[in-house]
Amino acid sequence: MHIPENPPNPSLAKNHYRENQIHRPPSDTHSDTPTKPPDQIMAEQIFIVGGEVEPPYFIGRDEEVRRIRLDLLSRAQHNVIIGPRRIGKTSLLKNLKRSIGDEVLFVQVNCRMITHPSDFFRITTRAMVETYEEKHRVKGLARKFSDIFKATITRATRSIAEIGGSIEHIGQIYLRFRESEVTESELIEETFCFIGHFAGEIDEQIVIAFDEFQELSRFNPAIFSLFKTHMDSRPDVRYIFSGSSVALLNKVFLKPDSPLYLMAAKVRLEPIGEEEVSRYIRSRLQMQKITITGDALDTIYRYTDGFPFYFQKMGFLLYQQTILEGRDSITSDDTELAFSSMLDEFDSEFESRYACKFSRQQQDILKYLSAEKTRRLKDIAESMGTQSSSLTASMRDLTNTMTIDKPAEGRYGILDSVFRIWLARNILRNNE
Ligand SMILES: Nc1ncnc2c1ncn2[C@@H]1O[C@H](COP(=O)(O)OP(=O)(O)OP(=O)(O)O)[C@@H](O)[C@H]1O
Ligand SMILES: [Mg+2]
Image (cartoon, rainbow, N blue to C red; front, side):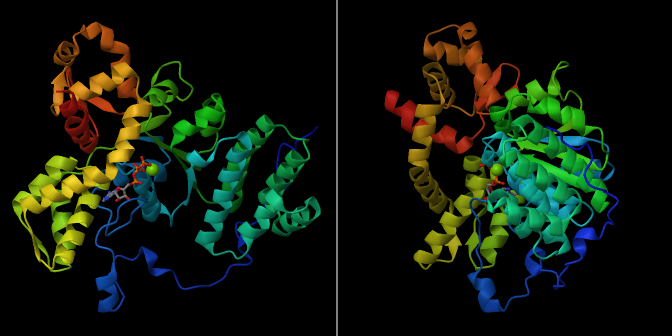
Protein backbone atom coordinates (compact mmCIF):
# COMPACT_ATOMS: atom_id res chain seq x y z
CA MET A 1 0.00 0.00 0.00
CA HIS A 2 1.36 3.35 -0.93
CA ILE A 3 0.42 6.72 0.35
CA PRO A 4 1.83 9.53 -1.75
CA GLU A 5 4.03 11.73 0.38
CA ASN A 6 2.75 14.91 -1.08
CA PRO A 7 -0.65 15.85 -2.30
CA PRO A 8 -1.12 16.71 -5.93
CA ASN A 9 0.66 19.88 -6.70
CA PRO A 10 -0.03 22.23 -3.82
CA SER A 11 1.12 25.08 -5.98
CA LEU A 12 -2.53 25.61 -6.75
CA ALA A 13 -3.21 29.27 -6.50
CA LYS A 14 -4.48 30.49 -3.19
CA ASN A 15 -7.76 31.30 -4.85
CA HIS A 16 -8.13 27.81 -6.19
CA TYR A 17 -10.97 26.97 -3.86
CA ARG A 18 -12.52 30.35 -4.26
CA GLU A 19 -13.70 29.95 -7.84
CA ASN A 20 -17.19 29.31 -6.65
CA GLN A 21 -17.10 32.22 -4.30
CA ILE A 22 -20.51 33.69 -3.71
CA HIS A 23 -20.82 37.32 -2.87
CA ARG A 24 -23.09 37.96 0.04
CA PRO A 25 -23.05 41.01 2.22
CA PRO A 26 -21.22 40.20 5.44
CA SER A 27 -23.56 38.69 7.97
CA ASP A 28 -24.53 40.99 10.81
CA THR A 29 -24.48 38.25 13.41
CA HIS A 30 -21.14 39.45 14.70
CA SER A 31 -22.20 43.02 15.01
CA ASP A 32 -22.41 44.51 18.46
CA THR A 33 -24.70 47.28 17.43
CA PRO A 34 -28.28 46.17 17.16
CA THR A 35 -29.85 47.08 13.86
CA LYS A 36 -33.20 45.54 14.64
CA PRO A 37 -36.37 47.52 15.24
CA PRO A 38 -37.08 48.32 18.91
CA ASP A 39 -39.83 45.70 19.32
CA GLN A 40 -37.39 42.97 18.31
CA ILE A 41 -34.74 44.27 20.65
CA MET A 42 -37.28 43.95 23.42
CA ALA A 43 -37.77 40.31 22.45
CA GLU A 44 -34.04 39.63 22.61
CA GLN A 45 -32.78 37.37 25.32
CA ILE A 46 -31.61 39.25 28.36
CA PHE A 47 -29.29 36.50 29.59
CA ILE A 48 -28.02 33.38 27.85
CA VAL A 49 -27.48 30.21 29.83
CA GLY A 50 -25.62 27.38 28.14
CA GLY A 51 -23.81 27.12 24.84
CA GLU A 52 -21.11 29.43 23.57
CA VAL A 53 -21.90 33.11 23.93
CA GLU A 54 -20.78 36.20 22.07
CA PRO A 55 -21.02 39.89 22.95
CA PRO A 56 -23.07 41.44 24.39
CA TYR A 57 -23.48 38.26 26.45
CA PHE A 58 -19.76 37.57 26.57
CA ILE A 59 -17.92 39.70 29.10
CA GLY A 60 -14.38 40.00 30.46
CA ARG A 61 -11.56 37.84 29.14
CA ASP A 62 -9.93 40.82 27.40
CA GLU A 63 -6.54 39.90 28.77
CA GLU A 64 -6.82 36.24 27.72
CA VAL A 65 -8.01 37.15 24.22
CA ARG A 66 -5.23 39.71 23.82
CA ARG A 67 -2.55 37.32 25.01
CA ILE A 68 -3.59 34.33 22.93
CA ARG A 69 -4.22 36.52 19.91
CA LEU A 70 -0.70 37.87 20.13
CA ASP A 71 0.79 34.39 20.48
CA LEU A 72 -1.10 33.17 17.46
CA LEU A 73 -0.49 36.11 15.18
CA SER A 74 3.18 36.31 16.05
CA ARG A 75 3.29 32.53 15.58
CA ALA A 76 5.25 32.54 18.81
CA GLN A 77 3.66 29.65 20.62
CA HIS A 78 0.78 27.24 20.81
CA ASN A 79 -1.66 27.60 23.71
CA VAL A 80 -3.38 25.41 26.21
CA ILE A 81 -6.45 26.77 27.97
CA ILE A 82 -7.32 25.11 31.21
CA GLY A 83 -10.40 25.74 33.32
CA PRO A 84 -13.08 23.93 35.30
CA ARG A 85 -16.43 23.03 33.85
CA ARG A 86 -18.71 25.95 33.00
CA ILE A 87 -16.02 28.59 33.31
CA GLY A 88 -16.43 29.61 29.67
CA LYS A 89 -13.75 27.76 27.69
CA THR A 90 -15.79 27.15 24.57
CA SER A 91 -17.07 30.72 24.59
CA LEU A 92 -13.52 32.00 24.84
CA LEU A 93 -12.60 30.00 21.73
CA LYS A 94 -15.60 31.40 19.92
CA ASN A 95 -14.56 34.93 20.80
CA LEU A 96 -10.97 34.31 19.84
CA LYS A 97 -12.32 33.33 16.47
CA ARG A 98 -14.25 36.60 16.31
CA SER A 99 -11.09 38.43 17.19
CA ILE A 100 -8.69 36.86 14.68
CA GLY A 101 -10.96 35.02 12.28
CA ASP A 102 -10.27 37.63 9.58
CA GLU A 103 -6.53 37.19 9.81
CA VAL A 104 -6.30 33.41 10.13
CA LEU A 105 -8.45 30.41 9.34
CA PHE A 106 -9.70 29.65 12.85
CA VAL A 107 -11.02 26.10 13.07
CA GLN A 108 -12.86 24.83 16.15
CA VAL A 109 -12.95 21.10 16.83
CA ASN A 110 -15.07 19.60 19.61
CA CYS A 111 -13.16 16.54 20.79
CA ARG A 112 -16.24 15.23 22.60
CA MET A 113 -17.39 14.13 19.16
CA ILE A 114 -14.20 12.12 18.63
CA THR A 115 -14.40 8.59 19.93
CA HIS A 116 -12.60 6.73 17.17
CA PRO A 117 -9.49 7.37 15.00
CA SER A 118 -11.61 7.88 11.91
CA ASP A 119 -13.59 10.56 13.83
CA PHE A 120 -10.37 12.46 14.33
CA PHE A 121 -9.94 12.56 10.58
CA ARG A 122 -13.59 13.22 9.81
CA ILE A 123 -14.22 15.93 12.37
CA THR A 124 -10.96 17.77 11.88
CA THR A 125 -10.95 17.79 8.08
CA ARG A 126 -14.64 18.61 7.89
CA ALA A 127 -14.25 21.51 10.33
CA MET A 128 -11.39 22.86 8.22
CA VAL A 129 -13.27 22.65 4.96
CA GLU A 130 -16.45 24.08 6.48
CA THR A 131 -14.59 26.95 8.12
CA TYR A 132 -12.88 27.73 4.84
CA GLU A 133 -16.20 27.68 3.01
CA GLU A 134 -17.80 29.93 5.60
CA LYS A 135 -14.94 32.39 5.70
CA HIS A 136 -14.38 32.71 1.97
CA ARG A 137 -17.96 32.02 0.99
CA VAL A 138 -17.12 29.25 -1.41
CA LYS A 139 -20.33 27.60 -2.41
CA GLY A 140 -20.68 23.82 -2.19
CA LEU A 141 -17.14 22.97 -1.02
CA ALA A 142 -18.17 21.21 2.19
CA ARG A 143 -21.05 19.43 0.50
CA LYS A 144 -18.80 17.99 -2.19
CA PHE A 145 -16.18 17.05 0.37
CA SER A 146 -18.69 15.31 2.60
CA ASP A 147 -19.45 12.90 -0.26
CA ILE A 148 -16.32 10.99 0.78
CA PHE A 149 -18.07 9.94 3.98
CA LYS A 150 -21.31 8.60 2.63
CA ALA A 151 -21.65 8.67 -1.16
CA THR A 152 -20.62 5.84 -3.48
CA ILE A 153 -16.92 5.69 -4.25
CA THR A 154 -17.57 6.73 -7.86
CA ARG A 155 -19.62 9.75 -6.92
CA ALA A 156 -17.27 10.77 -4.13
CA THR A 157 -14.28 10.48 -6.47
CA ARG A 158 -16.02 12.78 -8.93
CA SER A 159 -16.93 15.32 -6.24
CA ILE A 160 -13.43 15.64 -4.86
CA ALA A 161 -11.91 15.74 -8.35
CA GLU A 162 -14.04 18.83 -8.92
CA ILE A 163 -12.41 20.41 -5.87
CA GLY A 164 -8.83 19.34 -6.62
CA GLY A 165 -5.71 20.22 -4.62
CA SER A 166 -5.00 18.84 -1.16
CA ILE A 167 -8.71 18.34 -0.46
CA GLU A 168 -8.89 15.93 -3.38
CA HIS A 169 -5.78 14.20 -2.10
CA ILE A 170 -7.04 13.74 1.44
CA GLY A 171 -10.44 12.71 0.09
CA GLN A 172 -8.78 9.95 -1.91
CA ILE A 173 -6.96 8.76 1.18
CA TYR A 174 -10.26 8.48 3.01
CA LEU A 175 -11.86 6.59 0.14
CA ARG A 176 -8.97 4.13 0.34
CA PHE A 177 -9.53 3.90 4.08
CA ARG A 178 -13.11 2.96 3.33
CA GLU A 179 -11.78 0.16 1.15
CA SER A 180 -9.45 -0.92 3.99
CA GLU A 181 -6.36 0.02 1.98
CA VAL A 182 -5.29 2.61 4.53
CA THR A 183 -4.97 1.87 8.23
CA GLU A 184 -6.32 3.95 11.09
CA SER A 185 -2.91 5.20 12.13
CA GLU A 186 -2.08 6.16 8.55
CA LEU A 187 -5.33 8.06 8.46
CA ILE A 188 -4.38 10.05 11.55
CA GLU A 189 -0.92 10.75 10.16
CA GLU A 190 -2.50 11.94 6.92
CA THR A 191 -4.81 14.25 8.84
CA PHE A 192 -1.79 16.09 10.23
CA CYS A 193 -0.17 16.23 6.79
CA PHE A 194 -3.37 17.65 5.33
CA ILE A 195 -3.48 20.44 7.90
CA GLY A 196 -0.02 21.58 6.82
CA HIS A 197 -0.58 21.15 3.10
CA PHE A 198 -3.88 22.99 3.25
CA ALA A 199 -2.29 25.94 5.09
CA GLY A 200 0.40 26.15 2.38
CA GLU A 201 -2.09 25.82 -0.40
CA ILE A 202 -4.49 28.51 0.78
CA ASP A 203 -1.55 30.67 1.82
CA GLU A 204 -3.23 31.49 5.09
CA GLN A 205 -2.32 30.80 8.69
CA ILE A 206 -4.45 28.07 10.26
CA VAL A 207 -5.32 27.92 13.93
CA ILE A 208 -6.96 24.71 15.13
CA ALA A 209 -8.58 24.76 18.53
CA PHE A 210 -9.21 21.34 20.05
CA ASP A 211 -11.87 21.88 22.71
CA GLU A 212 -12.07 19.22 25.48
CA PHE A 213 -8.66 17.93 24.41
CA GLN A 214 -8.67 15.32 27.18
CA GLU A 215 -11.09 13.32 25.02
CA LEU A 216 -8.34 12.84 22.42
CA SER A 217 -6.25 10.68 24.67
CA ARG A 218 -9.20 8.35 25.19
CA PHE A 219 -9.15 6.99 21.67
CA ASN A 220 -5.40 7.19 21.21
CA PRO A 221 -3.10 7.84 24.17
CA ALA A 222 -0.20 8.31 21.74
CA ILE A 223 -1.90 11.09 19.83
CA PHE A 224 0.11 13.83 21.54
CA SER A 225 3.38 12.35 20.35
CA LEU A 226 2.03 12.69 16.84
CA PHE A 227 1.15 16.28 17.52
CA LYS A 228 4.73 16.86 18.55
CA THR A 229 6.06 15.61 15.23
CA HIS A 230 3.87 18.04 13.35
CA MET A 231 3.51 20.97 15.68
CA ASP A 232 6.70 22.75 15.02
CA SER A 233 7.19 21.75 11.43
CA ARG A 234 4.93 24.54 10.18
CA PRO A 235 4.82 27.98 11.74
CA ASP A 236 1.69 28.73 9.74
CA VAL A 237 -0.27 26.11 11.73
CA ARG A 238 -0.89 26.90 15.40
CA TYR A 239 -2.75 24.76 17.90
CA ILE A 240 -4.92 25.56 20.88
CA PHE A 241 -5.91 22.84 23.33
CA SER A 242 -8.71 23.58 25.76
CA GLY A 243 -10.00 21.38 28.55
CA SER A 244 -10.48 20.68 32.24
CA SER A 245 -8.08 17.86 32.97
CA VAL A 246 -5.12 19.00 35.02
CA ALA A 247 -3.81 15.44 35.01
CA LEU A 248 -3.57 15.44 31.25
CA LEU A 249 -2.22 18.96 31.17
CA ASN A 250 0.63 17.79 33.38
CA LYS A 251 1.12 14.58 31.52
CA VAL A 252 1.16 16.13 28.07
CA PHE A 253 2.62 19.60 28.56
CA LEU A 254 4.26 20.18 31.88
CA LYS A 255 6.52 17.28 32.78
CA PRO A 256 10.02 17.27 31.30
CA ASP A 257 9.41 13.88 29.71
CA SER A 258 5.94 14.73 28.38
CA PRO A 259 5.38 14.78 24.62
CA LEU A 260 4.58 18.46 24.30
CA TYR A 261 6.77 19.76 27.10
CA LEU A 262 7.24 23.52 26.81
CA MET A 263 5.48 23.57 23.47
CA ALA A 264 2.41 25.51 24.54
CA ALA A 265 1.77 28.45 26.83
CA LYS A 266 -0.75 27.76 29.56
CA VAL A 267 -3.71 30.05 30.11
CA ARG A 268 -5.78 29.29 33.18
CA LEU A 269 -9.32 30.59 33.06
CA GLU A 270 -10.44 32.20 36.30
CA PRO A 271 -13.91 33.34 37.28
CA ILE A 272 -15.02 36.74 36.00
CA GLY A 273 -14.39 39.63 38.40
CA GLU A 274 -17.15 40.98 40.63
CA GLU A 275 -17.28 44.48 39.18
CA GLU A 276 -17.67 43.19 35.66
CA VAL A 277 -20.37 40.69 36.63
CA SER A 278 -22.36 43.26 38.58
CA ARG A 279 -22.12 45.81 35.79
CA TYR A 280 -23.28 43.21 33.29
CA ILE A 281 -26.28 42.06 35.29
CA ARG A 282 -27.33 45.60 36.14
CA SER A 283 -27.10 46.79 32.56
CA ARG A 284 -28.89 43.79 31.08
CA LEU A 285 -31.78 44.29 33.51
CA GLN A 286 -31.79 48.00 32.85
CA MET A 287 -32.65 47.25 29.22
CA GLN A 288 -35.96 46.01 30.56
CA LYS A 289 -36.24 48.93 32.97
CA ILE A 290 -35.63 46.67 35.94
CA THR A 291 -33.47 47.93 38.78
CA ILE A 292 -31.41 45.80 41.15
CA THR A 293 -29.95 46.78 44.53
CA GLY A 294 -26.24 46.65 45.32
CA ASP A 295 -26.97 44.06 48.03
CA ALA A 296 -28.70 41.81 45.53
CA LEU A 297 -25.70 42.04 43.19
CA ASP A 298 -23.38 41.20 46.09
CA THR A 299 -25.48 38.15 46.91
CA ILE A 300 -25.37 36.94 43.30
CA TYR A 301 -21.61 37.19 43.27
CA ARG A 302 -21.19 35.57 46.66
CA TYR A 303 -23.20 32.55 45.55
CA THR A 304 -21.89 32.16 42.02
CA ASP A 305 -18.28 33.21 42.64
CA GLY A 306 -18.05 34.68 39.13
CA PHE A 307 -18.75 31.39 37.31
CA PRO A 308 -20.30 32.65 34.09
CA PHE A 309 -22.82 29.88 33.62
CA TYR A 310 -24.26 30.48 37.08
CA PHE A 311 -24.45 34.26 37.07
CA GLN A 312 -26.20 34.13 33.70
CA LYS A 313 -28.63 31.62 35.14
CA MET A 314 -29.25 33.76 38.23
CA GLY A 315 -29.82 36.80 36.03
CA PHE A 316 -32.27 34.86 33.93
CA LEU A 317 -34.23 33.48 36.90
CA LEU A 318 -34.44 36.90 38.53
CA TYR A 319 -35.56 38.52 35.32
CA GLN A 320 -38.20 35.88 34.73
CA GLN A 321 -39.53 36.12 38.28
CA THR A 322 -39.68 39.90 38.19
CA ILE A 323 -41.61 39.95 34.92
CA LEU A 324 -44.03 37.24 36.07
CA GLU A 325 -44.81 39.18 39.22
CA GLY A 326 -45.15 42.46 37.37
CA ARG A 327 -42.39 44.11 39.39
CA ASP A 328 -39.60 46.39 38.23
CA SER A 329 -36.99 45.99 40.97
CA ILE A 330 -34.91 43.23 42.49
CA THR A 331 -33.73 43.01 46.10
CA SER A 332 -31.50 40.69 48.07
CA ASP A 333 -34.51 38.60 49.18
CA ASP A 334 -35.48 37.97 45.56
CA THR A 335 -31.92 36.83 44.93
CA GLU A 336 -32.07 34.33 47.79
CA LEU A 337 -35.27 32.88 46.35
CA ALA A 338 -33.83 32.70 42.84
CA PHE A 339 -30.75 30.95 44.17
CA SER A 340 -32.86 28.33 45.95
CA SER A 341 -34.78 27.62 42.78
CA MET A 342 -31.50 27.36 40.87
CA LEU A 343 -30.29 24.77 43.38
CA ASP A 344 -33.56 22.86 42.98
CA GLU A 345 -33.11 22.88 39.24
CA PHE A 346 -29.61 21.42 39.47
CA ASP A 347 -30.54 18.95 42.15
CA SER A 348 -30.53 15.82 40.00
CA GLU A 349 -27.42 16.86 38.10
CA PHE A 350 -25.46 17.49 41.30
CA GLU A 351 -26.89 14.37 42.88
CA SER A 352 -25.65 12.18 40.05
CA ARG A 353 -22.32 14.03 39.86
CA TYR A 354 -21.80 13.38 43.55
CA ALA A 355 -22.95 9.78 43.43
CA CYS A 356 -21.22 8.66 40.23
CA LYS A 357 -18.06 10.67 39.74
CA PHE A 358 -16.35 10.25 43.07
CA SER A 359 -15.07 7.45 45.25
CA ARG A 360 -16.46 7.06 48.78
CA GLN A 361 -13.48 8.82 50.26
CA GLN A 362 -13.71 11.65 47.73
CA GLN A 363 -17.40 12.03 48.55
CA ASP A 364 -16.54 12.37 52.22
CA ILE A 365 -13.84 14.92 51.50
CA LEU A 366 -16.25 16.97 49.40
CA LYS A 367 -18.89 16.74 52.09
CA TYR A 368 -16.64 18.11 54.82
CA LEU A 369 -14.96 20.57 52.50
CA SER A 370 -18.32 22.08 51.61
CA ALA A 371 -18.77 23.46 55.14
CA GLU A 372 -16.69 26.52 54.27
CA LYS A 373 -15.31 28.22 51.21
CA THR A 374 -11.86 26.86 51.99
CA ARG A 375 -10.68 24.49 54.72
CA ARG A 376 -7.39 23.17 55.97
CA LEU A 377 -6.58 19.60 55.06
CA LYS A 378 -5.92 18.85 58.70
CA ASP A 379 -9.44 19.96 59.66
CA ILE A 380 -11.08 17.93 56.91
CA ALA A 381 -9.16 14.85 58.03
CA GLU A 382 -10.23 15.51 61.59
CA SER A 383 -13.91 15.77 60.58
CA MET A 384 -13.48 12.45 58.81
CA GLY A 385 -11.75 10.88 61.80
CA THR A 386 -8.65 10.05 59.82
CA GLN A 387 -5.08 11.21 59.13
CA SER A 388 -4.29 13.84 56.49
CA SER A 389 -1.77 11.50 54.93
CA SER A 390 -4.48 8.96 54.08
CA LEU A 391 -6.24 11.57 51.92
CA THR A 392 -3.34 12.42 49.60
CA ALA A 393 -4.37 10.31 46.61
CA SER A 394 -8.00 11.45 46.73
CA MET A 395 -6.99 15.11 47.09
CA ARG A 396 -4.74 14.74 44.05
CA ASP A 397 -7.51 13.14 41.98
CA LEU A 398 -9.98 15.86 42.98
CA THR A 399 -7.42 18.50 42.02
CA ASN A 400 -6.71 16.81 38.70
CA THR A 401 -10.36 16.96 37.65
CA MET A 402 -10.55 20.61 38.76
CA THR A 403 -13.15 19.75 41.37
CA ILE A 404 -11.08 21.34 44.11
CA ASP A 405 -8.11 23.67 44.19
CA LYS A 406 -5.57 24.90 46.67
CA PRO A 407 -5.87 28.67 46.90
CA ALA A 408 -3.35 28.86 49.75
CA GLU A 409 -0.78 26.49 51.18
CA GLY A 410 -2.55 23.78 53.15
CA ARG A 411 -6.03 25.12 52.34
CA TYR A 412 -8.43 23.58 49.85
CA GLY A 413 -11.73 24.70 48.37
CA ILE A 414 -14.40 23.36 46.01
CA LEU A 415 -14.06 25.29 42.77
CA ASP A 416 -17.71 25.23 41.72
CA SER A 417 -19.30 27.35 44.40
CA VAL A 418 -22.88 26.40 43.53
CA PHE A 419 -22.02 22.72 43.79
CA ARG A 420 -20.34 23.47 47.13
CA ILE A 421 -23.45 25.14 48.53
CA TRP A 422 -25.59 22.28 47.22
CA LEU A 423 -23.31 19.82 49.03
CA ALA A 424 -23.43 21.86 52.22
CA ARG A 425 -27.22 22.11 52.18
CA ASN A 426 -28.04 18.60 50.98
CA ILE A 427 -25.26 16.27 52.01
CA LEU A 428 -23.50 17.86 54.95
CA ARG A 429 -26.64 19.11 56.65
CA ASN A 430 -28.45 15.78 56.23
CA ASN A 431 -25.58 14.10 57.99
CA GLU A 432 -25.52 16.34 60.98
N1 LIG B 1 -17.18 35.42 29.13
C1 LIG B 1 -18.43 35.14 29.46
N2 LIG B 1 -19.29 36.12 29.82
C2 LIG B 1 -20.54 35.86 30.19
N3 LIG B 1 -21.07 34.63 30.21
C3 LIG B 1 -20.29 33.61 29.84
C4 LIG B 1 -18.93 33.80 29.45
N4 LIG B 1 -18.40 32.60 29.16
C5 LIG B 1 -19.37 31.68 29.37
N5 LIG B 1 -20.51 32.28 29.78
C6 LIG B 1 -21.75 31.61 30.23
O1 LIG B 1 -21.41 30.29 30.64
C7 LIG B 1 -22.07 29.34 29.81
C8 LIG B 1 -21.15 28.20 29.53
O2 LIG B 1 -20.07 28.64 28.75
P1 LIG B 1 -19.13 27.66 27.93
O3 LIG B 1 -19.94 26.60 27.27
O4 LIG B 1 -18.28 28.53 27.09
O5 LIG B 1 -18.29 27.06 29.14
P2 LIG B 1 -17.35 25.79 29.12
O6 LIG B 1 -16.24 26.04 30.09
O7 LIG B 1 -16.96 25.47 27.72
O8 LIG B 1 -18.34 24.70 29.70
P3 LIG B 1 -18.21 23.09 29.63
O9 LIG B 1 -17.22 22.73 30.68
O10 LIG B 1 -19.61 22.63 29.97
O11 LIG B 1 -17.78 22.72 28.25
C9 LIG B 1 -22.50 30.13 28.58
O12 LIG B 1 -23.65 29.60 27.97
C10 LIG B 1 -22.81 31.48 29.17
O13 LIG B 1 -24.06 31.45 29.81
MG1 LIG C 1 -17.14 23.74 26.58
